Image 1 (cartoon, rainbow, N blue to C red):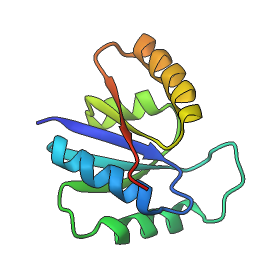
Image 2 (cartoon, rainbow, N blue to C red; image 1 turned 180 degrees about the horizontal axis):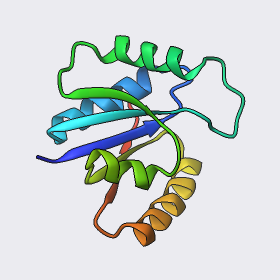
Image 3 (cartoon, one colour; image 1 turned 90 degrees about the vertical axis):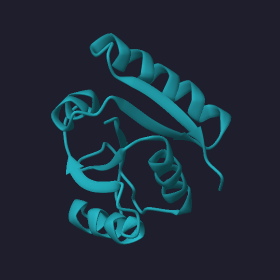
Image 4 (cartoon, helix red, strand yellow; image 1 turned 120 degrees about the horizontal axis):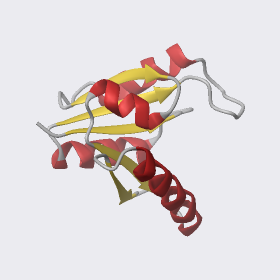
Length: 121
């Protein structure tokens, strides 16, 4: 079974997130949407509220699970036995950030791949 981790703050979740999660669920056996609890930015919603909103948004897809996490994403990948990190790209500037993160994660865990999907919206 190939499990993918789709991490994010999802504050709030939107159609782009749902699109990426749904498309990832077609590619992988299971997608774990991991709601990061303490990002270094202002948030509109508490972690519990964000998880509830995400669960409601993906409730009809049995291949998508929702959980919260803290700490390094790569460490959480190991905890949930995810082999892939899924990221969404909206604009060209996202690529540079995601590219650097993917390289850093690759140095920490060569066995965990990062894939990027272009958002539809």
